[in-house]
Amino acid sequence: MGMEFNKAYETYSRIKSNILTVFKGDPFNIDLLLGGYFTNGHILLEDYPGTGKTTLAKALALSIQTDFKRIQFTPDLLPTDITGVNVFNVKDQSFYLQKGPVFTNILLADEINRTTSRTQSALLEAMEEKQVTIDGTIYPLDDDFFVVSTLNPAELQGTYPLPESQIDRFALRFSLGYLSKEEEVELLDIKDPSKPLASLKACSTREEILQVRNTINEINIHKDIKDFIVELVRRTRSYDGILIGASPRASIGLQKLAKVLALSENKEFVTPDHIIRLAPFVLGHRLIFDQFVNDGEIKQIDIINNIIKETPVPK
Image (cartoon, rainbow, N blue to C red; front, side, top):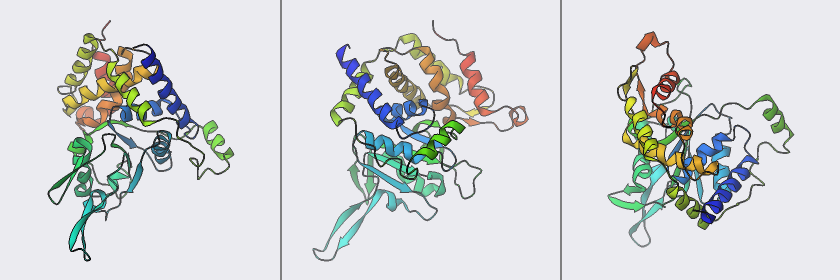
C-alpha cells in the first residue's frame, strides 16, 4: 500500500493525539472507539456516571468535524423523540417531517438503559440498516451514521435491560473506569474542568476519513487468522457456562476491528495478538451466560478468557 497506508496511519495518529489532549485515561480506549467509528460498528460504553464517556464521544466528533447530536434517555422518552414525527402545517394544509436527533453523523445515546425497551428499539433500524421508517416512509441516514451509547451498570436504580437483538448491533462494549490518582490530580489543574472540549479543534477532513477507511479494507489478514476468529466465535456456542453464543456478526466485527488495530500500530497485516486483545470487548456483551454454572462462582470474563486460551493460536 505504501504511501496511502502511511497517510492513513498519520491521519489516525493525529486524531488519536487530538482526543488525548482532552481525554484522561487508558489510550487503548481511544483505539477501541476509533475502531468502532472507522468500521461503522457502534459502541456501548458501560460505566458509572462521571468517568468521561460523554467527553470521549464529543471529542471524536469535534476532531473529525462532523455533525454530532446527543439524546438523554429518560423513562418518559418516546420513539418519536428519537426518529422524528410528521407535523401538520395549517398554512399550506400539508404535513412536513420534523426530524429527530437520529438524523446526524455521530449520535450519543446517553444512558440508553434509563428508558423502556420500546423506546430503545427505535434505534434498531437506524443502527442496522442506516434508515428510519416514519409513518410508512423510509428515510435514509448518512453513510457515516455512528452510535456511541452509554450504559449505566444494571445495579443502579431506574435501569431497563437492553433487548438481545439490540445488544448484538453494538460492535464493542467496554468500560473506561475511574482515573488513576495521578490523572485525577492532572484534572484538577485544568483551568475549567467542566468544559474540557472548549479548545478542541478539528484535525482531519472527510476526504482523509474516507481514505483511512479505504486503507483499512486493504489491510491483509491471513486465512489462518480468519479460521482463528471463526473458531473463537464458534466455541462460544457450545462452551460450558454459556447458554447462547455469539452470532456470525461477531466474527465479521472482530475481523474489521482487528484491521483498525493493525493500522493503529503501523502494521499492514493483522496478527493473532490483535484478535486476542479485541475478543473480550467484541464477544462479552453478545453472550448469555448460565448464572448457575459452578454455583455462580466463575466470572463471565474468566469464561471468555478461558475460551481464548483454549483456542489454538495460528503460528
